[in-house]
Amino acid sequence: MHATFPQFTQFDPIAGRIEGAPLLERRLSDLRGYFVDQAAYATALAQTDSLLYTVANVEPAQGEGALHYGISCIMPGRVGDEYYMTKGHYHAWRPASEYYIGIRGTGILLLEDEESGECWSTPLIANSGAYVPGHAAHRTVNTGTEPLIFLGIYPYNAGHDYGAIVERNFRHVVVQVEGKPTILPRADYHARRR
Ligand code: PAN
Ligand code: ZN
Image 1 (tube, rainbow, N blue to C red):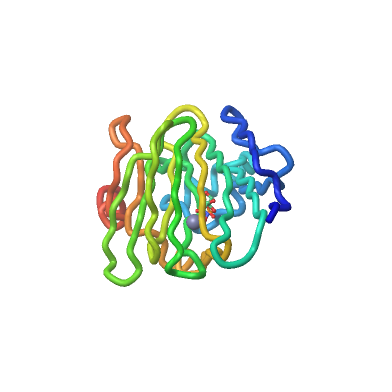
Image 2 (image 1 turned 90 degrees about the vertical axis):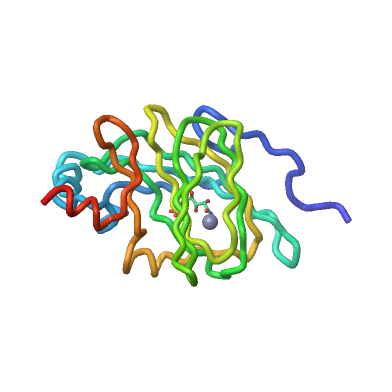
């Protein structure tokens, strides 16, 4: 059977775009309540509603076995000490896993297993891959000085579930401490600032 979608795709590895794919933009105002330092968030938003990241998804086919994929581009920057990051989500269909391939820049992928509560992280850098297992919340953080660009490949029916993250956020934050990206339990970050 001939596929009805393009068999060959070129990515723009500098801008993080896929030609013809619709571009979703996430700005500071879209991430209200996500950053740990609320005062820094309010100050930043009062200045400008900065672009935090873009996602271009290609969803060529439906049905058992089909794959979707998308390229994400997270800008460099921070809100207070916390680096620019994605909202983060579970897949609506929890067993769906995903594979991330780093194309440009330097970042960290935060993961949390829904049932065990286990938290872990992996680097996300150019020419490397990171596996996101099913049932894991995942958030990507740009800890570098250039855009962080990566490809994500997932089952067509993975879907996004943002609700749980909106409610309780990730247990860890990725913040700049003494000039270096540092992963801290959210509670420890608050305690340090008291
Ligand atoms: C990615 C993410 C993308 C943006 O394509 O959707 O990086 O992150 P948020 O969806 O958390 O805003 C992916 O993991 N898709 O399943
Ligand atoms: Zn995902």
